[in-house]
Amino acid sequence: MRLAIFALLFAATAQADPYDVTWSLRFDGKSKTAQGALVLGEGSQQLKSLSFSFPPAYSEVQANGTLTKDGKRLIWTPPAKGGRISWRVKISEQRENGTYRSLLADDWAIFRGDRVFPSAKVRAIKGATSRARLRLDLPKGWHRDTPYVQAEDGTFRIDEPARRFDRPVGWMLVGNIGTRREVIGGTEISLGAPKDEGMRRMDMLAFLNFTLPAMKDAFGVMPEKILIASAPDPMWLGGLSAPRSLYLHLDRPMVSENNTSTLLHELTHVVTRITGEEDNDDWLAEGLAEFYAVELLYRAGGMTETRHQRTIDWLKNWGKNVKSLRTDRSSAEITARATTLIYAVDREIRRKSNDAKNIDDVTRRLMRERKVSTAEFIEACEKVVGGPLSSLKTPLLKP
View 1 (cartoon, helix red, strand yellow):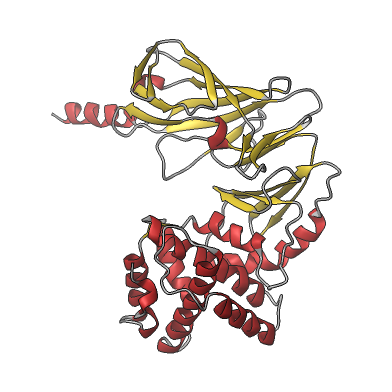
View 2: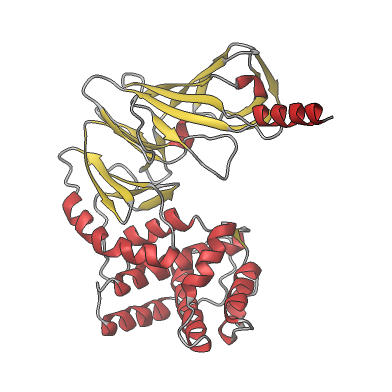
């Protein structure tokens, strides 16, 4: 009996061993595309099938094993040992206004991993998890940077604890690029952009050296590495976050004339990973990001108390005509009004707890959930103070 139990435990342990996955990408400047591939290695017998979504940017999908079509998805049943599926993907993605979300230029490229590596639903034995790596094959003279830590063999280790199947999804930058790196508070910060395009890397590092410690104090934890990738026109004039990384157009200032910071706003998204549960909960993620874009700069000593209050007043005036925050997407005015609401909540939490608690305690709770509804935000605030808050009894939160 004991031997049988031991055998079952051993089998369960063996099944739980990670299986090896290698994602790769090879660039073709002439066709403005890249050749991508997913290779399964040791332990891949734990996989039964992978269901892929290949949007129109993908073509030339090939694989060993079996490929079958199921509606808009392709089902790959790999061979018993190992297996490889490949595709070609167009990197450049143009918006309606003529700017780009991702771009493969003559000697550099900037893109998100989820643009070039397809999403997959995996059928595997119970408890199976991946051990994933990323390999970028570049033209001679090109360099690379990703949100992931580089291993000794030149690949990048992909580890997303919340997922069983790891896929590279953050911002990436390759080509004739220049980078600066520094470890701040235990986090490797990497700043990259095409060479000779005017990225003020040292200015940004100085800014981050005094603001990131305040961010770590607020959120408690920080990623192992964060990549901040910049690029010039025709890339989109703004900032966009992704896991462990963000994109910021080269012309965007670190602090705007209204005293908010696009850089700190997007970094808040990167670190907290908080998003709305439904479309009409978008105000929460955007309001928190804008709150910390102002508050962290103030806490770090980047603005006086007078200017801090002037900024809050300016945001309140900007959003004064907003009647409800619960719209499908948070506009600039809604974000401004959401920010001032969160300031009111923060003040009430501090007052009711005799400064023992603040909005950071709420944010840390929400970070554990990631997708958060307005009702869950209210509940988290009430748990922090041990009762209802008058600042949350507002028509602004009604759908």
